[in-house]
Length: 203
Image 1 (cartoon, rainbow, N blue to C red):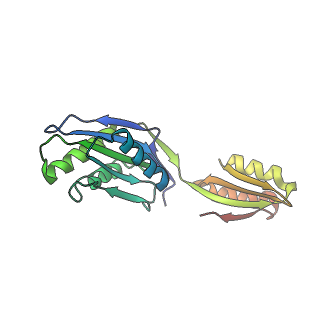
Image 2 (image 1 turned 120 degrees about the vertical axis):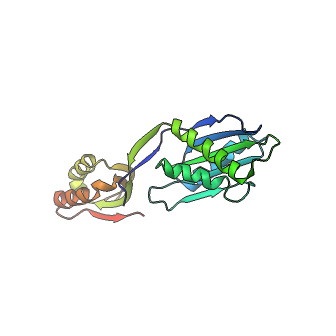
Image 3 (image 1 turned 180 degrees about the horizontal axis):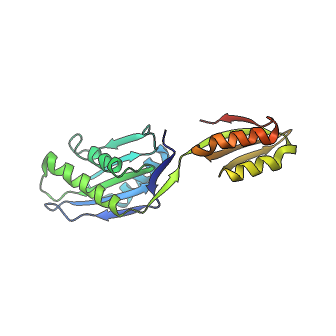
């Protein structure tokens, strides 16, 4: 299982040189969830509503469970698939790439479309700002108030990020932790609390 992944820092776009009159504009947009990726695609459609095609692909998680592509009216596998190959070739995830085509009046053929869509996506990704991040695991924990100090110390040492906390008869919290620190965190919580911290995965 991957412990780190590469993704883009911010949205960017790149317009390739026209090919036989057709313009190809690639938008690279960070997205970790399908809903966010779909919003990004619709945003590009709204900005460039006068274009004929908005072809896209996304790869949202490091394990490759959430991967999709769409040709948006171009011949099958001539647009979305080459965009996806560029995302995979750049070893990136957590993003969607939309390549908009303004038709120039001359058909390019399937081979020409593959080169045009893949080329625009690839050159956009070449220029994108990329960062490496840790894969995170979401956990829920419950513990008595008297071990709060020890718990907070263990969370801080292992880079855990608090997502939500509730304070009732005991503390109940949801957090995310780098996956390569999870084993250490579990051991430290167990030792610091004499086993009184209860931990369960959220995913």
